[in-house]
Image (cartoon, rainbow, N blue to C red; front, side, top):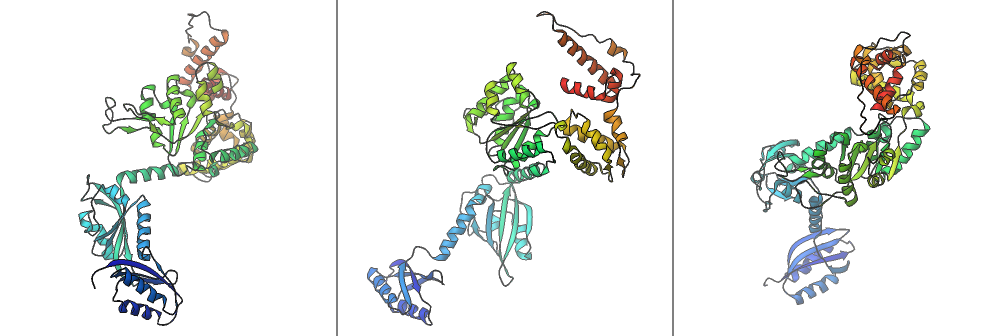
Length: 533
């Protein structure tokens, strides 16, 4: 019989002895060549064959339908194994990791699109030996030993830019225990760097469960923050220095739909105006003298699909505020030296300890930027408004510092807590932690921390005979500009006070000693320092 056309049919049947023989006999009678067959209860018999012509095909189908136990004979589109192969291929191609499968001899049987992209190859390599694609020593070692090899370095032999890659190989072992091949996963150096950065970042990010509290004011704040975290809206964190605004930013990110994406933080006080655009928006290659030849991603691009935390947003000068506002309004950036707008999907969390409303009145903060940022304001209370949390915080920080300093066995006498609660804590939680670290450094291990241990550091009142102010401090001269008339007395006093405190603190860096020098408590000194920033 001359070669005809290919056909694929599905035979639905009710099981009976001899049914398969009867089906085969029909194919023999019509002298039809069977190419493939697969049988299962779910799909029935799927048979691929070559038939001489349409007349023979119709006669064959009619004969099959006459067999006792055959329920139906229908056309089919694919063999089940072909469907499984297509499904596997689809799965492999949506995985971001490069995957290559080889036989026990090292012949490539599968390679996904990610592997082709990582290795930068555009030729067919299925059926070729793996050593034409990668250094195969560790791969073949895995097949011969039956043991997996994790994250070994390999060199590419093909591709537009042969280079180093990180591979893992897992032997494929059948039910009899025989190794029949291996699966290789492959990552480029950039992927490894991104993974390490993401792991490092997530390890150091605070979650809501890490925030220590028992006060009602903090309970309500966390309830609100957890609700806010689930959205993509801009959040403005307000609060004094040391209240933990960055920890809240971490926690909001980690409770958000973006938790697995980048969290990028920038302190706005650390961005000089000359570098503002290049750091935030990046630059193209050759954008300016000293630029990296390959260009650079800015912080917005690094945070794409994740969260960008703008700390100390109140410190941004007006020109930088205008450039930031445009990006927040448009949702795009333009790199320095570039000429195209690049879309960025970034959630903004900003933070400040400054009074933005007052800065707006003074013309030092843009009103339009304020409203762009102030979508969801969260006010983090100072420690003096959450004194119920102090005992819990102190115990938690004590354990943390013991681990950090390698010293153990400390406890806090209950009497101390009432004094800690009455202290104003101008430096908030950060000051509480620093105070405990100071005490642990000077008190032997396995000690009960008493009020006397804290008194020298926090609670000392000025002595009855203050230390004499240095001659230099006494002779401070404050220059008063009268260009626009005399300043107010309040301004003159404030300027004089700042100059005196600065001079005294140079000679007496301890707030307690400076307080003794000036005849005030160290609390007053700390408050003045806080006001003067």
